[in-house]
Length: 332
Image 1 (tube, one colour):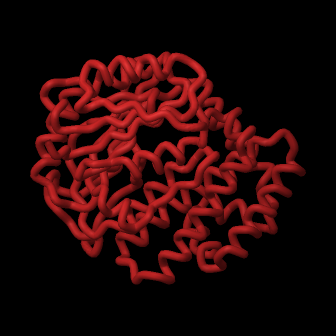
Image 2: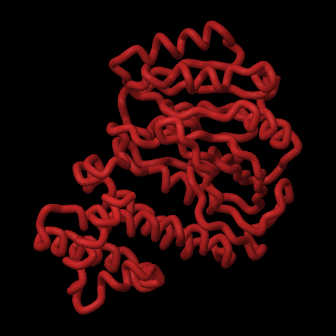
């Protein structure tokens, strides 16, 4: 039976959460319509045992794939390589899906032929859920082209479904042995798609507040070299895409927003460093790299008021920005 969707599970040492993840996908309403690839990225805990339990329960749906550790990007690459479904999406091994929302989403996906499908997602922090509404002005279920005047605040990995054949035929590869690579996948999906549909359904539940997450502030400081690497990568991608293909205004804007998010996040992590001197030096050095990669990108990034303010007066406002940003983090 042909599957409508491949769900690629990025699983590394997630024995604490994986049962909830896979249980949410073990539902008779859509079990025969999906394949779930559990990509074990060299886990040292009981991840394998949990994955094999579900493979035994529904071998036609759940498939355990073991590989050497290569990072989140490597699990996405392996998932793309093995995927057999018409569509492809990623679910992290410590997150899960809303069963009712997912069942409705699969029904609609069967009728869809858009290259890219977006859904809503929620964050879950200690049981408290918040809906993130990032898409505006798009009629649910209607197919749009990127040439239409679309208003999308941002596209995240947790709301993204894309045709598998587009990923495979364009040889989409995500940086391995590195955190923060979700943004590369998102930019690729925008670039390779021509048509886009939005389903106004909450499907994905993203767990936040886990101290081991890469987006934890302490971990971001620890892994700043990876964050900077990815930011530079997406700047190169954007520059290459602009050179190789005439992009519509909406598509260019959607990619720009993701690039600006990655670069801006890297700058903000540098603001968290202990010393004003080190923060300023690292920010200036990183900004020079962006300019070397693409003067055009360097200039358009000033559309972000934070970046424009940071550069003003030869980066003179960095000490003030450091104080304000730390106050903001403590508040929220």
